[in-house]
Length: 248
Image (tube, rainbow, N blue to C red):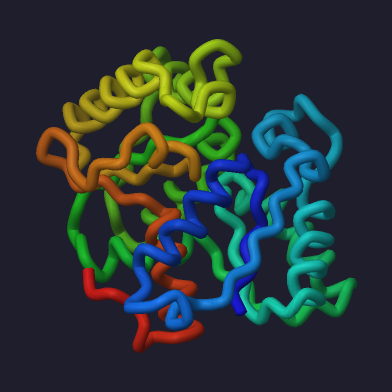
């Protein structure tokens, strides 16, 4: 049974649950895979705030507790649809707490799965990454792609601020207004993507799990757009029931 840690933010958990269904070969209700989604946003402190030293409470402990609850409810494999939660200062605490709690869930890693997918399908590409300020500060995608030999470009200065505001702004950011997405949030993200193309990007990574809500397209301005939530959904299906994974 697949377990999902929701609430980071809430729509990201719903998004990956939907994509697990979308990517599964099934002709009836009964042929879909069993899935548990525990969405407890009230229990999990903000990831970027912790990474940027605006909060002292590491979210890893709360995430590990939810993973233990998923295991107790029957999950055997799990995922966390939050790129920022995989930054080393948080993810290392998740791993340590899982070990302390005796949690034997197989936990997939959204960054590793995304890098593997791009390496297999888009080798020798220049990678552009859109992410939260917290994620970018800890360079998860940058480090992982550079280890594989990929050139990396990221927003800088005003473009970096646009991306972070498109996620977090209290008036128009995706977290504050997920449905419908504010025009300004989407427009700013598209402008940031266009700027990355000018820097040579051929593949864009939507490195925040809520960005696909604003950018559902699979390509933009001649660039391939990669949705890590979809990649993670496919990796979960591949692990538990490979015969049920839809072809790309």
